[in-house]
Length: 201
Image 1 (tube, helix red, strand yellow):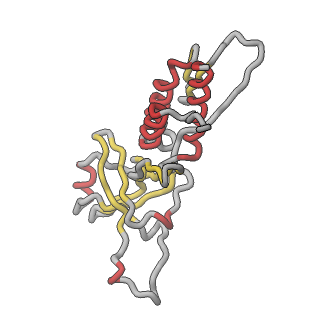
Image 2 (cartoon, one colour):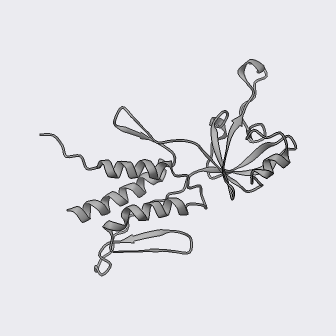
Image 3 (cartoon, one colour):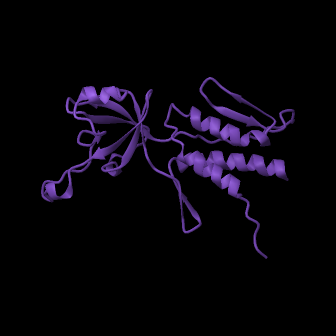
């Protein structure tokens, strides 16, 4: 007998949208709102605390309480320094791995909107195996297509802007999810699915 699939097309579509939404540490409100919108039909009440934590409650008058929790942020970067030639150096926001950064595409979050950029790294034919350096915070940088610091600033980029990878959700071999912030946004997804299944059953 075939097993009944617990995850529906609607819930998987939510997971894709949830994972594709950038919510860097300290700036999670967009992702939290998305989660609350999805879970609202399945809960009795909710509240948001001063830190932005979103709580959904089922059966608030119950004598005993069970808490299921998860976090929804993701590792990211902060703009640390802009050179006169328009290159942008960064600092970590969380556990960002500088070793995988070279050539990755990113979004710089500004008040004017998202600005596209890419981690610069010398092309392979310009490097020598005997003197090749490893990526470090002081030798990797962002290139957003500008030729001066002033041009970068005109785009709304300044020290302190948050930078996130442009990673998108995908499924490997119909079984395995790949995406940003799976730790622990998948936990938030599981909470939402528990609430849905309790409501439907």
